[in-house]
Image (tube, rainbow, N blue to C red; front, side, top):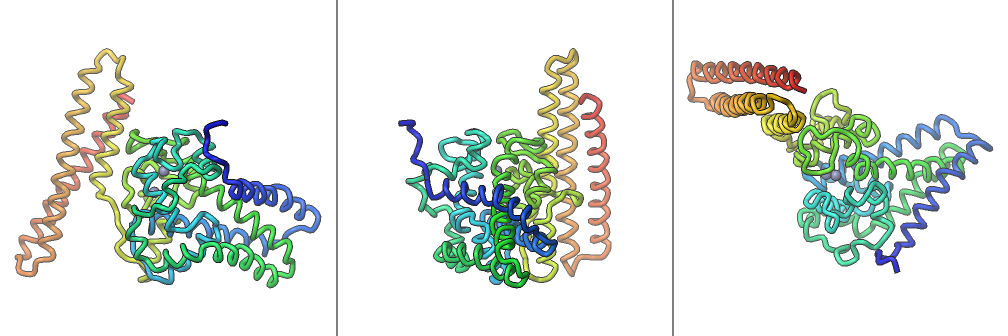
Length: 373
Ligand SMILES: [Zn+2]
Ligand SMILES: [Zn+2]
């Protein structure tokens, strides 16, 4: 006896069979019969549909309610989630909330990265690790009230079969080569879309930087973001999980964020949540200071430099705080009809001045960091 929970043979066989089809049968058929551009584009589109249903739906809508959207969009996500075969949204979100709450705690985090890369990637699905808690959905009471989530949960298996055979079959009939389309849009699309989302639990906890926190294993990595529809900014995400964005800069590759933003512009999504930018900046500055303090350990003037850093950090935090208050006051003055125009312009002026002062403090802070880095 190994002492490990028993193997879940259905899952093991599922991954082995779909993996063999994708790795052996798909290339063999391509070699013998060939695929055309129509089939490749159909597979890519279906892969995008699966991926975005998981990231925009399962993850950023249901696991962390970072925005609201129309029922029919939720139905589309529910269908895409079943097409991805990643369990029902209810189950996925429940697991994911536990992952955030107990991240890296081997006895609680269902895909703890501390149990190794393989375990967090796929190993956690191969054995009956959570037998006692498998049907415990007490941490998703909000989702139990979502009729779309519950409809998908009740009909999950039917939806899996319908989407995974139905969609490739219909595209195959349209195209003419049913077997080839079933292989590439069915099997290859499924295996690839699963593998890239599995990277969020494995690679995004192993490879990359930790600009916001080192209290858990989550990393920020632009390359992982390319593979995972923007979920690669995982260090930020574990720190600020109520934000609908994972890549917060405009140049960060986060198609899920752009998609949700576009939905909101079309009137199909609302209540998009963003984390307080000063909190984010403070977390980043704190982390940078911590890293630098670590580096300075053996520096001759370590104490003096640390004091200088601390003073600059305090100044920066103070000006950020003041700017935040000034901004709120300005917004309040703007809203209030009885306030004099003079008062409004004074509030705006003060906010603008503090914003400039904050930018200056930020530049000085960066310069100081660069000097000792
Ligand atoms: Zn998350
Ligand atoms: Zn994570």
